[in-house]
Length: 383
Image (cartoon, rainbow, N blue to C red; front, side, top):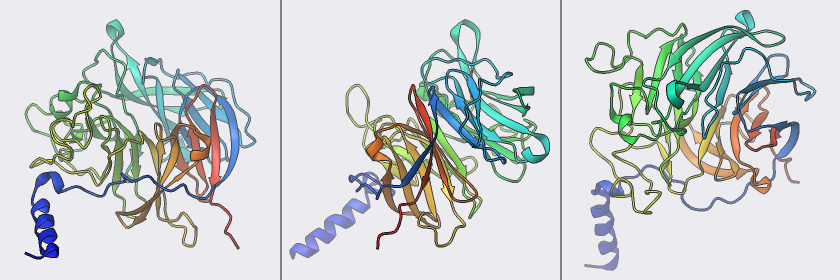
């Protein structure tokens, strides 16, 4: 057999093996992108976790220890706002996401996710909404509580996204108790979908199934800290941390199983061996990631930039990278990832959240004792 025929035969044989059937990966080192134009809007934030853009040009920012602050358009940082719920501010827990209600202009409502304290030091992910007043929050109502409450301070999630059709999605983690992500009778390790009043949509995939929680949209998620609706297609996108390697980008579909902890592209923290058994393992009935990183950037917040033809960053998905200490920009062709570059790497900062404004400005939070809110614009074109 000629050498070229041998190579072709090997490639065809590999393609038939489950371990070779991998989705697109971003394993090779990425060349740094030209430096973006960066403006520091505010500093002095203690481990900020999420930012919401207000219609008046200001911002709301959560701090993980349990504070919600307002940043004026001129960068003035308010004292902590009153009326924020008590949080379990240990480890990865605390005050997490903040988003504006779809009817914010009318009802002044905001949504918060947080680690809610329970008996004897236990905690679980919770989501509440409240009215934003001048001095703080009023009419706070908890609309979701992850059950059961568990001990431990890891893997709370939790991002909030609205689909524009009267539903809210809430991402979560497995609370570092791996097997729970496959148990339909409990909520850790699941993506959930609710009505805006906290009710259960009648068309959720597990409604009416014995032993299954009706809130569940999809299962098999490890620790999901990124969630966004693609404005071009209306599809939900989700990102999550792998065990060590294997960070994932998924397009969650109702009732689908995304594998954790039975299938993973990562390795065990303690032994360094592939986890659970074979790197890149794929199992029947479980969805492979849409895109996967073999070397974990440690993905956090994410946001789309669409609908700005001619803009250098149009048709992009931005993701915060904590361990990767950069802002990832994925170039998109529809749903396909066609390229990747890293921004802000020169700062060496952990990027916790990213949001895109109506004018295509990109807003970023750095996660530190002295965290910052930054505004990014594309680099000036070279002549």
